[in-house]
Image 1 (cartoon, each protein chain N blue to C red):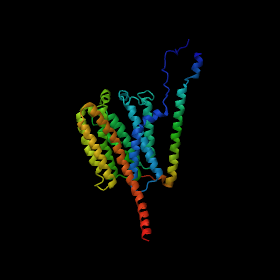
Image 2 (image 1 turned 90 degrees about the horizontal axis):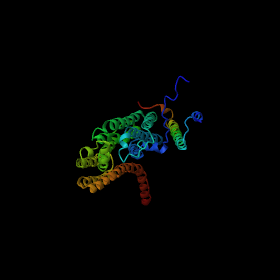
Image 3 (image 1 turned 135 degrees about the horizontal axis):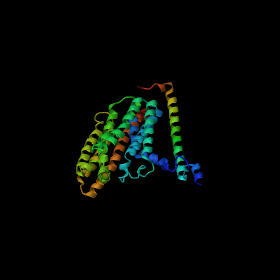
Image 4 (image 1 turned 30 degrees about the horizontal axis):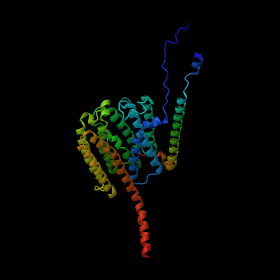
Length: 325
Length: 54
């Protein structure tokens, strides 16, 4: 007979993960990441001076991994509410593929490596700003605002607006008006975009106890707020043209796209009948993604045109010269 | 029989082995990218790699 009874303590069998690479990629919120990469790319492209392509790729990689890390930390902290909403119930944590602790470790590791790599290889201003962006999204938005106030996505939108600013700082080592304009455009784009989503997903948010504006203030107040924010957005998006920061191609495009946003926001405001309202909000939600993408793509196009224009001028001059000769 | 199982410890299922192998490959690739990145930036910056703002 032994002194210690080995059967007295029954340890639970350790959990062996079956999570595949795809589950970890899903933690990074790839769709959000693609928008971050694109806006950061525009921030890099419009920055003045020469920035070596290797450093540009490094910056983009660090910014996108930092954004993905924020997404993973966000999912780790919101596993309980994600399980209650149909839109998020398929995420790796509610499905039981990845535990919250694993997601937390994954997000923290990627945050650390993205910030340190950007700081060491590019510059510490950009590294610090990326660290602040992750902190803002995870601590201020996810832990602080999301479950407390209907202004969650308004204030929290600052985190999603920072990537082009981080990119600009990575390229120049300083800050200027142009990246702040990009920041403002994304900042004022966020409320109409997310409130449109919240309008047709309000049951989901109510079930999870997330105080989104339609849940707290009702759909009518949300429709009005969407319209007001869209008016401000269109004005801010067009302002860089008369202010002389971006060219006419951008100015005209922003006005055309802005008119589209306004028409759809007015449509959301006047459509009160359920099925009509659902259609209108879905249309606005879908168009808002296209709006931001097209607006930033135009800025990219302007940079390309500006780069190519001198050589076109050279060819035209040569052609004219030959003709005259 | 029980003793034998105890000696074997935890036996992974095929699915667990497969996902672990995939995760290991992904970690190896990520580390490889990091090495290439640091090497490329060192070449691009040359001696200035140690000269960073702040």
